[in-house]
Length: 102
Image 1: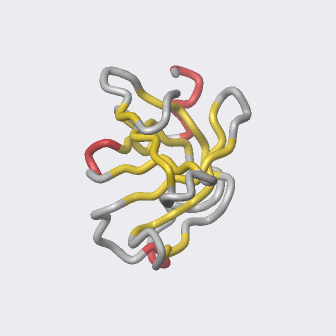
Image 2: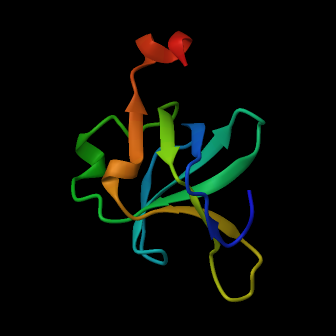
């Protein structure tokens, strides 16, 4: 994927490899994800309005599909890359029982 760019018409299949946490720096919910090529990136979810401590969808091991992933630099120094999701409708939480059909 290219940086910075919204990858229109594409999706990213990934799994969370950490529990989600509130990121004051990025003003959202963050977690680390791993894609099918074993690449690891930070995922930041904006505008998700619920308590991450009371839900299991952001726990380690959750399988996600991210629609039109937006890859951007975390800051102006361009050292770190994040995948940013601004709309909850751009994330599909995949039921593990459906994993084989992907």
